[in-house]
Amino acid sequence: MILDVEQVSVQFEHQWVLRDISFSIRQGEMLAVIGESGCGKTVLLKTLIGLHRQTSGTILFDGIDFHKLSYFDLAKTRTRWGFVFQQAALFDSLTIGDNIAFPLVQHTKKTRTAIQEIVETLIEEVGLDRSVLGKKPAELSGGMRKRVGIARALALEPELILYDEPTTGLDPVMSGLINELMVNVRRQHNVTGIMVTHDMLSARTVADRIIMLAPLAKLEEDEPQILFDGTPRELYQSSDRRVRRFVKSAG
Picture 1 (cartoon, rainbow, N blue to C red):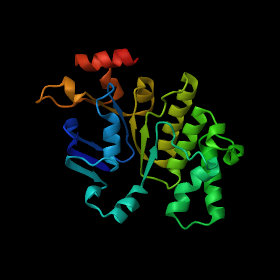
Picture 2 (cartoon, helix red, strand yellow):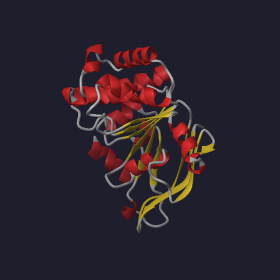
Picture 3 (cartoon, helix red, strand yellow):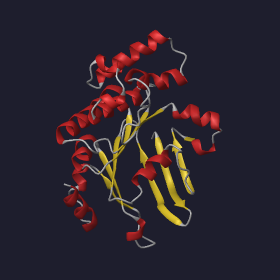
């Protein structure tokens, strides 16, 4: 197991967002987290990498409880992860090449020539021409920026990549290309992935396991927040009316 989540709860002021969340992820597995708006999907994703701190419970990455690490050790551990933000979150003032190179410049001692070679390899791997490396993010389409975001996430050869709504705002054709890219990334790099998504086609295509969360406001105190944990095929065979309703409405 590369990631173990044990009885994790998150509270903001007087509002609980996550309650007693437990699951594990094997190395090389691709997990999709689904559920209606307000169920805590993105909060869970950010809690897993320490952007939010859990109120209770334990998160172990490769056996390490990183919430007990010093700031320096936590920063070092984070280089083992990649994060693909919902809107790509590229630096507007930097070129595409410099955006991809940023983690390499910040966290390695590689030469400029070595970094440039890595950047050129990654931009081609995500299906873009090298000519875009000199452009600024504003000059690219939304789908192209998403690809650049994936290239940047791969720069440090991470063991785990987290995707936050990777197909949001894209047309069906571009969504399909991003889904295909995520599948290829997993195969080529043997990287573990966690994807938060509303896109059921993306979840079916990319993930080999799906977790569905429910908003706590719609649950009784003794009800588990994870409504479903299983394969995409099992999801569509679920007898839970809440799961079936969500899957039907989400397409």
